[in-house]
Length: 124
Image 1 (cartoon, rainbow, N blue to C red):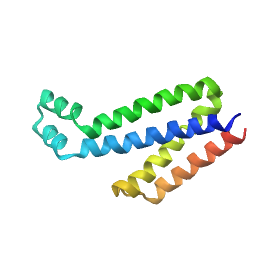
Image 2 (image 1 turned 60 degrees about the horizontal axis):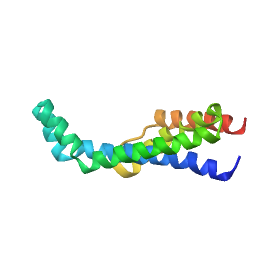
Image 3 (image 1 turned 90 degrees about the vertical axis):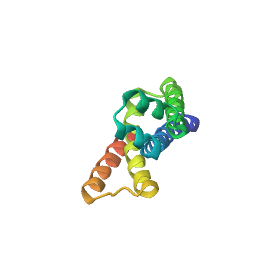
Image 4 (image 1 turned 135 degrees about the vertical axis):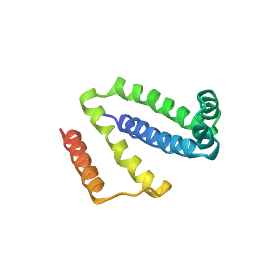
């Protein structure tokens, strides 16, 4: 399989991870949180869909889906899809390093199991 296919796979996973971080920043922003606290559905939706962070996150998520479609056109689903689990690992690391979210030993153990599973699929 060409290296470009693996590049597309990694790009899709990275874009999806980035989108989650940006969406979290957007949903944690003061205007969105204020709208959520008021419990006014129309104001809340308006605040969310006009947030630059949320719009940026949704755009990145859409781009990751387009890149994923390219991956599916070049790679077996049974080999490609388990690699998406790397997004869990990257997202947790991004949460820790970029957002200051805590990671405990149980989560590290879970991440280790995910990595082991992806490695098994990758070499098969």
